[in-house]
Image (cartoon, rainbow, N blue to C red; front, side, top):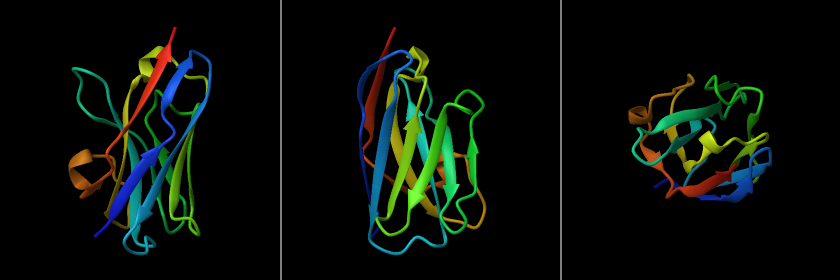
Length: 124
């Protein structure tokens, strides 16, 4: 059974930075894709960034490209999301997700495993 635990959320002023972590357990992840998603109140869950565990290839939604960086540490089974130049519109609950796959996947319904979420609030 795969388990995902996020941490690192909080309150930050616009222009600030946060780093989210997602610790994975339950198996090896060499054949997995992992992703960060977010959901703001009244809005649908949207993908933020995804990474293929085997070769660290990545993809980002346009609104965060150049500001956010997704990475992973294989030894620690941890995925990170470094968020810089944060904007109030980045405010949301951020979730990590994982699924077996050999290609990058951006649709939330394609992910079987989810963490509990961590709140990120950016004040103006």
